[in-house]
Length: 58
Image (cartoon, rainbow, N blue to C red; front, side, top):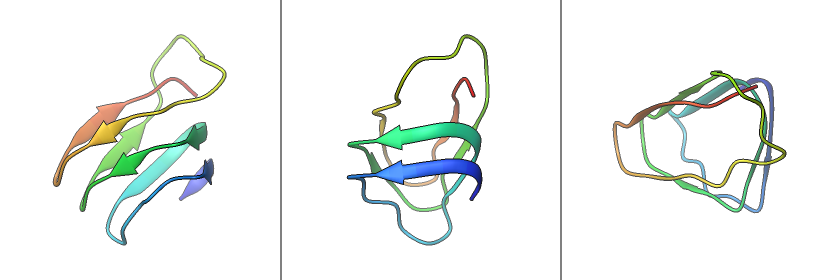
């Protein structure tokens, strides 16, 4: 986890939010990559299954 914050979320080991700011109220599966993409929302609330890949604005 780099340049990211997690709040009120379930994030198992093997998942990596990188440079996406704050991730909040989320359920994230195993081996998930979350990376930045424009534009910038105030908070992210993704629900992702196992082995997902998502781009999120930083």
